[in-house]
Image 1 (cartoon, rainbow, N blue to C red):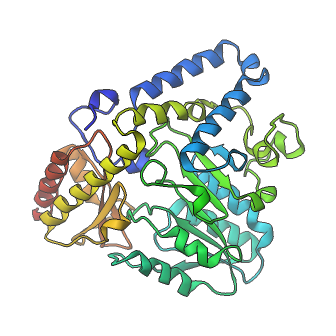
Image 2: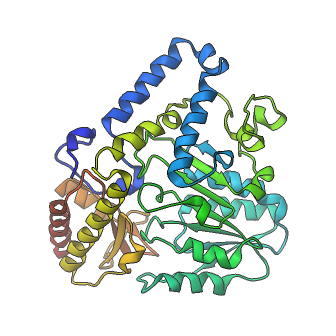
Image 3: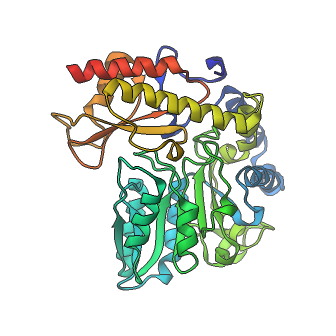
Length: 393
């Protein structure tokens, strides 16, 4: 595994929750600070003199190449939730009374909320697909989605990798059955950097993802990609200068809407190429080696945990990337929040950062592990020992 010294993670803590907020290597943060200093030296010249747009286009080019997108269809956003909101707000004109937005019961809560708000504004409703977990095969997910689609379904919002349950979803197989009649919106928050991921090959209308998770950029970097035939009708949820051509972006209507929505710190976006280079250099095979290594580690860590709990894996290996969730025995006192008290016990008594979610409803709960290059197998053995100790009381 990669030396922990390349990261700024607190010593003495087991960081097994990369999936929630990522972790940024020190060289990337140093590059970000250098950029911030350069911006502050002459903000007017930087933003109005062409440097910002040129560097944004360069960063866009790097991200597009990494995820298999065309540059014309890719814009930066602060996070995947922002991307989902932009798409759903843009699609409200195609929704009407009786129409449905379809989501799975594994959908990230923030994005489900966005779907609920868009539905309420248009007279549409949100329908929910029940995808089993534990699950035996990805075909079960395909069948569950297709069985829930009706002639009223206009939009499917689906994760590429589910947050709470850690499942790699068969998005391309589902999209092949639904597009273009149903617009498929992919919340790919976890996918780039974790799994072999090419947005152009998914066959979906929209893909939004985070760069600050598995790509390890600075916090606040994500992207939205829109298929060519859908681009003219997509707007940022913040309407700004680009709406009437008031920002000189040469990339067309989509870029004009997103490249400048007002003054903010763009350094997280502009240093994504530094993150791609820094993490890729941590493995002799580059990013393919990174993805393979962290997936193998995650599967190994999952085996250690499920063996300690005396259960089988709740999902097949081919539905696992670098996060994996396992059921733990129901809580006697689950509390009222999304996070189970076991999570706090692991942090406070064992110095382990790992999420324990209430899912799908109290008292049922899931423990989710993550794997990245700063982790190793011994950490999952320590986690398994801590979890069994806490469960014994």
